[in-house]
Length: 240
Ligand SMILES: O=C(O)c1cc(=O)[nH]c(=O)n1[C@@H]1O[C@H](COP(=O)(O)O)[C@@H](O)[C@H]1O
Image 1 (cartoon, rainbow, N blue to C red):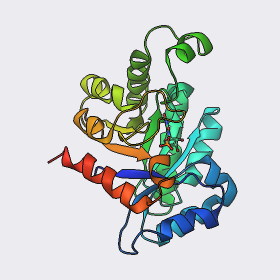
Image 2 (tube, rainbow, N blue to C red; image 1 turned 30 degrees about the horizontal axis):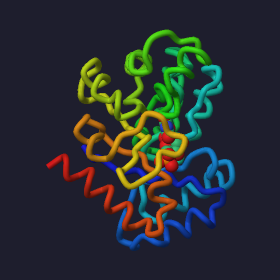
Image 3 (tube, rainbow, N blue to C red; image 1 turned 120 degrees about the vertical axis):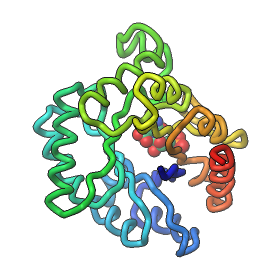
Image 4 (spheres, protein in one colour; image 1 turned 90 degrees about the vertical axis):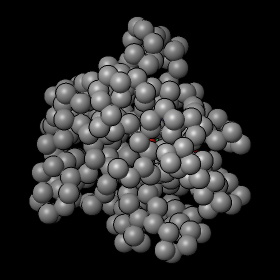
């Protein structure tokens, strides 16, 4: 299976996002994540523009609403030609199953392969205090992440978004084929920012992560292409 280093294209405008991508050699296809900031600013047009340049798109809109609304939203996302998309596992079984149904129906309507549906378990910005006090969920963050992964798998999701700190436990509980994509990645030379449950690319690879999501350590680097390649080398070096 392809193990991508997914670049989080967290920019406020289409111009800034495309100018960032212009720094990469034309023949270098990458996987980029378009999240709420860029999508709210530039809509489906930026998704199509990035795909037209030959890149894979992970559309990260983290749907969480009543099942009917999520199913309808996913039907539209399924028509865009993206490789991955996200939903919140906290929405529960009925909503997650509706998300999968909508995504598959949308892709089929366009004759496209269905995107990989990834459920958010516990955000990498969540710590023990947020879990126990704000969310009123007892136990550890890791136990909650594994639980949400079980709900996601039982509902037809293809994998989860989790911290690399939990991906080993999720694979142990649910099998290695269930995809675990891990943000909260910080090379030793980068700042943590607002992330709480972080890991280096090498440690995430050893823990069994199926793909990294990396934003600021690449997008805010003085030389983003060099930063991307440095992370790629650290990450893929551990898989050989
Ligand atoms: O769904 C995500 O991609 C996501 C889930 C999560 O638990 N934590 C997390 O950081 N992300 C996203 O991953 C990216 C991380 O960006 P940096 O912290 O700049 O590397 C952002 O676009 C976040 O929205």
